[in-house]
Image (tube, rainbow, N blue to C red; front, side, top):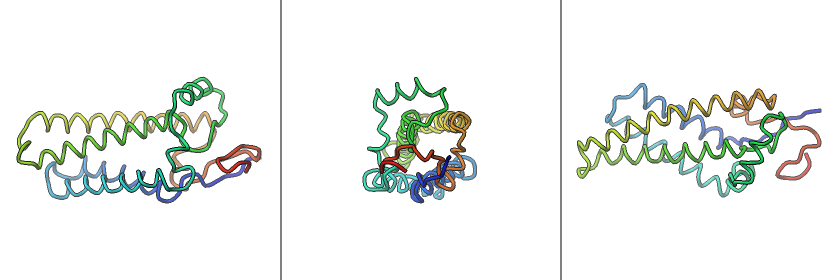
Length: 182
């Protein structure tokens, strides 16, 4: 028998969708260098900062300690990825690696955008090219992220995209959680 448990709290879900939405608004609907473009970038940075803090003090599945992608966890997950069994309720190690990589690239994107507003880097072609390269890198990473979520949903027989909307994931009655038996 399977039940559902709240895994992704409201702050995790809101930060995920706000960062994604604001990034795509900035990429496709604003003019590069406009004031709104800059403010949306700063808003993304603020949301990421709040989520980072929540990674230390938040709910159990939101905490970094629950999904640190150690080499052992990564290898174990890859070995068992095809068996369709869940190996924890929160982020799996590959998802954690993607999340951390996206945060790193998004942070670099925001920093390069901010640099373009400074007198020291105004009109510097390499900063503009770096900024564009980072945007393109995020496009690729988002594609991989969504494809992996779809594949993992299929393998786990649990819609992970829907789970990031309502916050709940399927669990078996005998499955262990961070809190012990469910």
